[in-house]
Amino acid sequence: MPLTLAQFQALPYVEQLEALLRAGIYLATRYEQEDMINLYALGSFFVEVAYDLRTNHLHRCQSFRSTDGLENYLTVT
Image 1 (cartoon, rainbow, N blue to C red):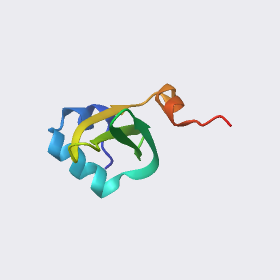
Image 2: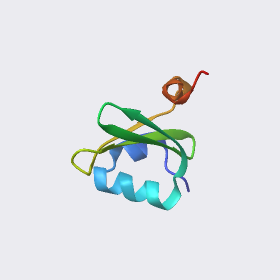
Image 3: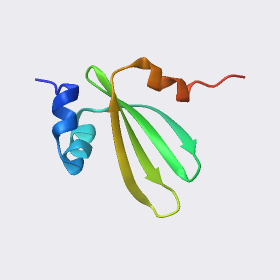
């Protein structure tokens, strides 16, 4: 049975990352200051994982359901 957003958010950080490795679908990457942020789909919600390029460290995992959070991945040419 897939995780719900509430179940995912209740997991400790390391278990959130493990759930992404098991079932997450990579969608996109964006860059913000010194971070590389990867976007994943996990069932009915999205997860962003921030990686600090300077320190070589994963430091944030943010999950959300609204497609409003996807605007940062749109490119206008």
